[in-house]
Amino acid sequence: MKEIIEKFLKIEQEISSEKGALYLFALFLRENAIDVSDLLVAAPWIHNNKAEILKYVVGKVQKALTPKELVQLSRIVLIEKDNPILKDIQSTVHTKQGFVEITDSNFSGLAIKHAYLITSQRNINDTDEKSSVN
Image (cartoon, rainbow, N blue to C red):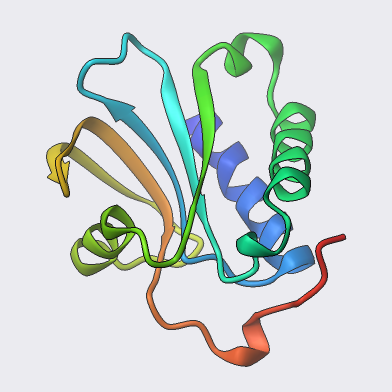
């Protein structure tokens, strides 16, 4: 699992370098999921064009992961900055381009069996944000 987490760390670094800082970039294995994780992504620039942003993130993930690794990913979820789950995660875990592992947790009713948080931060400087969608 460490190898795939390293790949996601590189993906997060690429995205934040190209698009701007992220509030959240994490892999969550939901309690009811069977060995497939969700990738949660939140950033101040996501609301600009969700379809285009999702396509961009999917492209980054597909480029970085092998087919065997891709089947371990259930979905990619873009989260708005005012989502209560995001606020709950941010109040619990703070990390930037590292990773924190958590188990058996609950965030605003979302039961998590296992999670790897690569970035979870509340305050992003304006200089860390980029307005471009490209």
